[in-house]
Image (tube, each protein chain N blue to C red):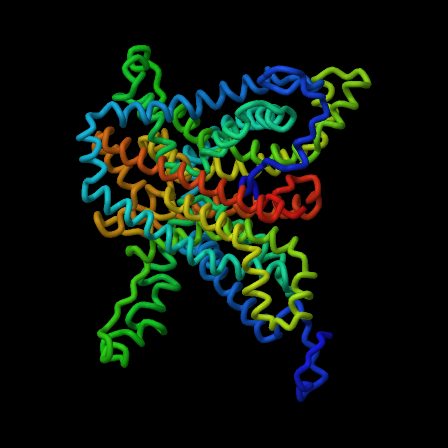
Length: 319
Length: 293
């Protein structure tokens, strides 16, 4: 999959030309076309990204500071940010567990249907978010294929319904997935899974099995080998996968709004609040929430790059 | 066999490899992975097709040939037909500049290219509303000159380009970096000009990676929801792309109709996945080195 890893590949830094004395913006090369391609890239990025993003910051920071603080600390804004970041964190954490298991199974075991399973991992990248949204919400609604299992009359739900042993001990539990924060987390798990699998998978593929053999000959049990030799080596990839899944989940909109229920203060995500503010013609509020999300997204990008730099220093390769 | 100082196990024929788990553990992990993927990924996909045909094939066809649906399909195709080629040219230009040259601030440029991956789609749409909308920075000027961008097709195209432009560049940059400059330098030293070197040397080298990037870019362009939703204004039959049309039908409780249109997009996703897998299997070493070296 594209985009999951840093592109600064060590092999590419081949300096064929002797450095000329003095400062130059671009290293001299016989390859033509730098001016054209660099200029075009810059022009395109300026029109598509730089100018619009500048307009956003301009809009938010042209507000009086006290208004800015008022919007940022508004109870509904904080609740929406909390829902977004909280459910994204939980979803990314669940994805780390299952993502590592899926990557492990795909790399280490041979079983019928493995290639199919491998291909399906990328489904969330290819399936439009709105389609995923209505499908998940129909599937996990109280009358849906999976949701009905958890309804009070369902196979699983009956154990928690009024009159059950569980209800007499801990009180009846009505398990609802769709239209609750649980539904939000579920949609975010769907969206984030490939990020974890696709960052962990290549590292597992390249893992030197000699290390495992060495651990085994030194008397380690399989469990010790996994927890003390393999998993530590995977840590940077797992952290990167977590960060990517988390960053994607925080901004996710299409797959979430159908299943979320969108109740203010409870299951309203920050991107939805931006849309609502925009529809109320409250551009300052929409911009302020957007800037908060952007700043946090930048911080996440920085964190990802730091993890990768740390991993390169420690293990001598990119992720 | 691992040397083990403990007494021999009672069943000496059981061979336990040092680098894999017991069969029971293996089975459990495989079952866990398969069950998880079924619940989260496969079932929703199956459901889309099942719900699409819930009211029969006739209703399915009617949902797709209805006037607004046709308009939505046409708009989606139009937007992709504009956004994907523009991003293709950008992707080639950006990866040529970034992969073939060493210059100051390259890391920053790459970060900029990556930006849409970490920006919420809603924010991607919002920035254009702030710029071109009625209350936007140049909105009044646009209105005075009768140019419509927001709540019209140009806005939808812009938002789609914002969300999808990294896909091709991101595929080509690592690929061209891994291939190095040697081939082009050889061509140039043999008398080719820059164009010829690109057309006859670089392009054949990157064609599968390019196709891969175009595939992913197109899938996202046709399926984009959040960014497009903010700039479209949801004018039925005019500014609704397929994902927006699905949303409208779904919110009107026309579930079978919504899933009928959704099944087309799901089909597109499946075709994309199949082509992508075929490309990875056949031309794996000619694709970017980001996966499967």
